[in-house]
Image (tube, rainbow, N blue to C red):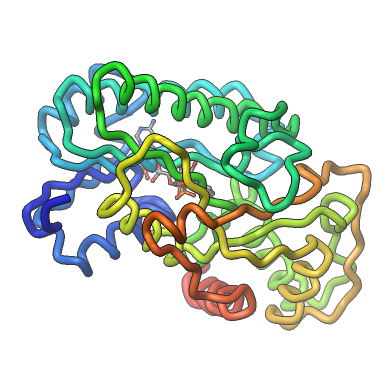
Length: 312
Ligand SMILES: NC(=O)c1ccc[n+]([C@@H]2O[C@H](COP(=O)([O-])OP(=O)(O)OC[C@H]3O[C@@H](n4cnc5c(N)ncnc54)[C@H](OP(=O)(O)O)[C@@H]3O)[C@@H](O)[C@H]2O)c1
């Protein structure tokens, strides 16, 4: 790819959690021009809005991050919304980039696309070996369909679209909204509140035995921008940290960081989600030298500190 200084880069979802970190990376690398559309002006579920955005921005590179995302609660409450918005936004963005012959398009998928019982670590080759875990299947399948679209467009039209699969993300700037938050911000919010109010116990959804791998948001952003710079092939590529942690262990670590020393009760009547998660990052290391830098303990401490400073 040509130098960032010569590129006009459109980052859909660029004002969101991951998007803000990606934009910070691009600025640090001296990007020529950065366009960050907001949903209020360009609703990317509408094809006319996507057409107008590309006409206004005329990008050389597109990084597509706009999405409706949430934790297990949001996925259970709004499966149809998560399916259709993510499918439509990605479809229209990839098509418009093809029509306008954009030089490079980066589509960001999700670990929720993997089959429920994928052998750990998840290899990209296992992506189609089964149905995703039921609670996040509509979201995961909508995102996975965009990989098929990207590969089909590359095969038929030679469009340069790459596809990345980050594991669960966390970090400063995450969404702490009770309805939409993922597990780390949800636990930080609840343990902080209980510590301050002196209440106990705190209930955590599921058995606590499910495992997750968390990637610090700045590491994910660096991986995405490195891939935009150096990776040009059709195969999907995982981005992960290599650290697998049980929800019970995670809850205890977050409780300690939030100053909560009361009881933690797991509620097995609530879903665990996927039983285990950790991705194989061999491809990312080989193709664009990716390696996560921020260990979970440090990332959690930075996220708790950010929450203390920025919460409403
Ligand atoms: N968070 C994770 O753990 C995680 C893990 C793996 C992959 N990902 C992927 O990473 C990407 C970013 O996720 P995130 O966690 O940063 O989400 P986020 O903070 O909710 O940001 C998503 C952004 O998408 C935009 N958006 C939503 N609906 C839109 C619409 N109809 N039209 C235009 N823009 C719309 C929003 O823009 P406005 O602010 O202008 O409304 C928002 O800023 C997504 O593709 C997600 O699937 C996330």
